Image (cartoon, rainbow, N blue to C red; front, side, top):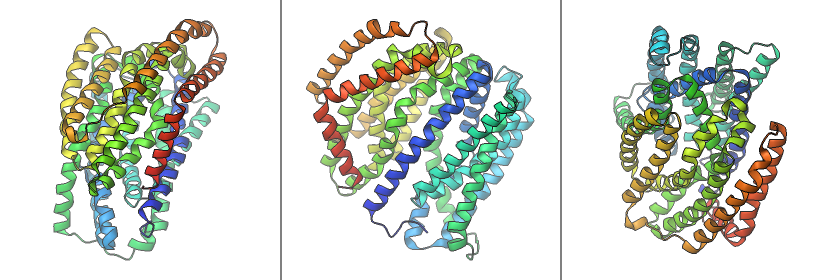
Length: 505
C-alpha cells in the first residue's frame, strides 16, 4: 500500500525531496492569489474573505473530535500489522463523523449567516460569502481526510500534489474571472470552492485507483466496538491539542473581526502573509525535525538532540535577526511591492512583531523536541496558557493601540511560549549558545542596518512598484549574500549537518 518496503533512510530522503520541492512550488501560489485579490477588491472585502476563512478554520478544529488527525497514528500501526480491515474501518469512522458534523455545522452557519455577518463581522456584505463558504467548509473536511491518509502512509508526494492541484485550479479560475470581468466579492468567494473541487477530484481518484481498489475494495466494513473506543479515546487527546493550537493561531483574527472590523482584518491578513515569508524557506526544515528527535530519543541519544538543538538555535538566531532587520527597515516598501498603496499600513503592523521572530524559530525547535520525546501534553499545556495570555494582551492592545496591538501580542506570545518550552524541556536539554558567533553577527547586522536605513531606504521614495521590486531583489541578495560570506565556515558546517540528518546518520 505504501513505501513500507523501503528503509527508514530511503523514506526520509524521498519524503524530504517531495516535501521541499512541492512546498516551494505550492507556497508562492497562495501569495499570488492574495496579491491579485488585493488589487481587485477593497480592503474591507479582503477582510471579509480571509476573516471567514479564519472562522472556518477555527470551527473546523471542533468538527470531528480529532478522528481525522488520529489517522496519522493508527494507519501506520495497522499497516505494519497488515490489517487492512482496520484501516478501512477507521477511514469509515472518520468519513461518517465528518459527514454528520460538517453538515450540521454548515447548516447552522447558513441559517445564522445574517446574524453572524451583522453581529460578529459588523458588515452585511459578509452574508453571501458566509453562505458560499458553508459549501467550502464541508468540502475542506473531506479534503483533509484524503491528505491525512496520504501523510499517514508516508506518501508526501500525493498529499502535496493534490494540494498543488487545488491551488493551481484556484489561481486559474481567478485569472478566468478577471478575463470575464467578474471580479466581485461573490465570484472570488466561489474561487475557493472551484479549486477545492478539483483538488477533491484528484485526491479521490488517486485514493481509489492507487489504494482503495487494490487493498481495501474487497474488505467488508464492520463496526469494531473495541477499535472504535480505542480510536475515540486517542482522538479526544489529539483533539485537545489540535483545538488549542488552532485557537492560538486564529485568535488574533477573530478578535480583530469582532473588536475592530473587516478593514482591519484586511490589513492584518496582509501582515500575516509578509511575516510568513521566512517560513516559506525554513518551514520544511522544521517539518523534518520531529522524526529525527524521536529517533534519537528512542536510542537515548540526548547529546545528539542537544547537538542538533544547539546547531539550529545558533544559526536560526542569526538568520532570524537578518530577516528581522531587513523586514523592519523595509516594512512599508515590502507591503507596497506585494500588495500596493492601500496596504502600506500593514507595514506598521509588521514592525510591531518582526523583531520577535527569532523566538518563533526557537520555539519551533523546542516544540519538535517535546513531540519527539513524547511530551505531547506539555505542548498542550503551553499552548493553553498562551491562549489565555494572548487573549488578554489582545483585549488590552487592540483597544489601546489598534490593529498593530495584535501583532505586538503575538510577538510577546512567542517569547512566553519559547520560555515555557525551555522550562518543560528542563536542564537535560539545555544548551550553551555560541556567544562569540552571535555577538559578531549582531554587531554587523546593527552596522549594516544603519547603513540600509540611511543609505538605501531613501532610494525607494517616490518610485513605482516595478523599480521597487528590482531594487529590493538586488539589495536582498546582497544582504543575505553578505552574511553568507561573513559566516562561510558556519554555513558549510550547518549544511553538512543537515545532510547528515537527512541521511539518518
